[in-house]
Figure 1 (cartoon, rainbow, N blue to C red):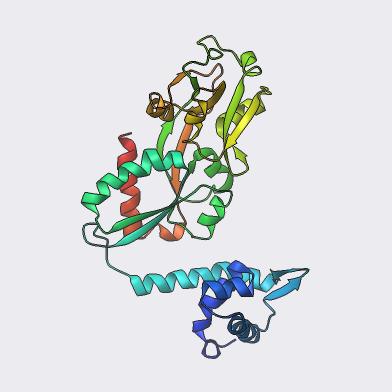
Figure 2: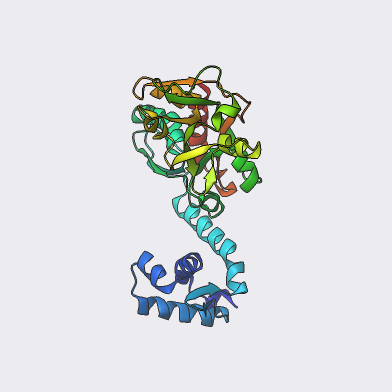
Length: 302
């Protein structure tokens, strides 16, 4: 196909169709009617001489050729955006920017919240958009749909091994309970865990590192409460018989308001090592480089 025959205004609708795999949803994202979006799809099919989207049961699926277009089309749009918005550098004191960060509430509280205090004075036009850590976190980075992902080094190595990263901070797990819970003592053993009632933090469908390690060891526990909010766990323990495995930094911060006591785990557990990851396309962005440095400087003081 000759470039002169291709209407480059169709690249954005094409990228949206490849992402949503649905004419109606693509139209909604672009504020176009379904009939207009259908007409655009027809033009794209003609231009590429390929159906692109085909009906499979009640769903639409991409053809193999359409699948092969996802990465190059996204790259083209990213390059065009950089050309249009290019600046020789980034001055945080005057430049405006919104950074999208995917992080757990734990990382948000202990890493991003302190950053907000500094941004107020150093970068008044910089804002943060924080998204929760859900099961799609790896895809968010692969699709360059966020500036940064804050996740454990273990998960980063498993799902995004080739992506650039920088270690931010470390923590360790402790066993926490309400200070009036007599089931938890300094002499608590792994065998005692079988008699205890646990509250558990989960990331989407994945267990946290401590619970996964105990499962791998075959340590039986009665899990009575599961929550996607790690910050909520200490407060679920207050005036209840529940115990939980939580980061020590979180235990210290909530010891008084949640009336907690905590002990070292009766068996060594994985160290919590959180890192920031990003898509390689963002590595050369001056604003992105500044944001990473700012986070890294802050993390070194935690």
